[in-house]
Amino acid sequence: MKKLFTLFLSVMTFGLLSGQCDYVIDMQDSWGDGWNGASVDVSVNGTVVASWALGGGATGTDQLSTLNGDAVEFFWNSGSYDGE
Image (cartoon, rainbow, N blue to C red; front, side, top):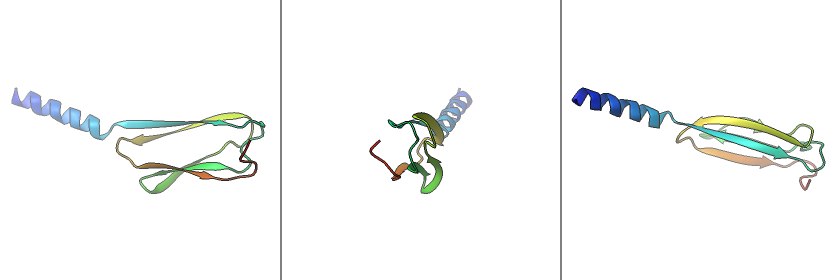
C-alpha cells in the first residue's frame, strides 16, 4: 500500500508541476486594415517569447502555451491609428 501511495503522490506532483496554461488572443480592427504597426509582446519569466500583431484584415487570433507557475506579462506597443 505504501508503494502505491508513493506512486500516486509522485504522479500527482508531476502533474501539478507540469500543468499547462494556454493563452489565446482575439485581435480585432474596426477599419479592417490590421493594426498599422501595433503589437502585443508576450514575456514569460522575463523573456519576450512572442510578438502578436494583426498584419492585415479585421480579425485574427494567436496563441501561446506556458507552464503552470510561469510569470506571464503582456506589453502593448503602439502603432498608427490605435483608436481604430
